[in-house]
Structure formats: C-alpha cells, structure tokens
Image (cartoon, rainbow, N blue to C red):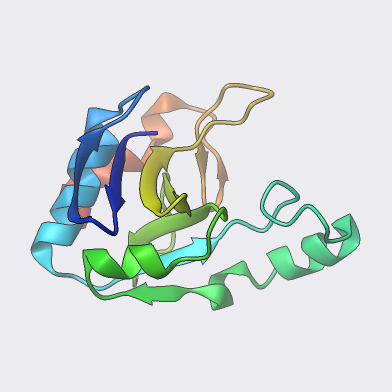
Length: 142
C-alpha cells in the first residue's frame, strides 16, 4: 500500500507501510493533471467472498464495463467499502495501480500475486520487468 486519504483529508499524501514512491507519484500526477480517472472493481473472491466462483468468472469477462468515473480525488471516498479496484486514466486499457476504501480511508497500492510474487496489472501478470507498464508513465502524467 502506498498512500491514503480520508474524509477528513481530501488530498492524497500520507505514506503507509510498504510505500511505493513510483506508484504514489504516478497517481498524484494523474490527480494533479485533472484528467478523468476510472476505478474498476477487481472481480475475485477476496472482494466478493459470498459470490460463487462460476459467477465471478463470468463477471470478470465484463470487468471493463464496470468502470466508475473519478472526476476529482474526493470521488475516491465514494468507492464501495472494502472492495479493491484498478485505478487508471479513463481511456487507458491497463494499469498496475489499485485502490480501495477501508474504514473511510482510500488506499492506493501496487498489486502482486501472493503465490508468485509477480506484479499484476488489469490485463494480467507482468512476466518480464521490461514489460512493466509503469515504464511508460510519461503518458500517464507521472
């Protein structure tokens, strides 16, 4: 996890444990640019534990249609409590940034597979560090 914001503090800025400066800097660049962002819920059993796996697998195919527009940083506070989702510029197709709201605070984080330790993106696992989408952060304002 990298940064947090709460209803009492409408700006992202407090570093957390396992702080990833690059992710935080990229997200801050997106927010500072005023560009429209999107949050897409990650469709998995961690987010939806009471949903049968078969339904989650079907819903995953429609993940991109679940985009929630983020017009300003305060909109992040309206995300569903306890659900991790992908955060990206609205017209982008891939990201390695996720965020969620827990106890009224927004957490911004990078995602790694707990089994393999490899970085994850919206479109799948990053197998080669050279394929990391963060390398193209200039396009994203970071």
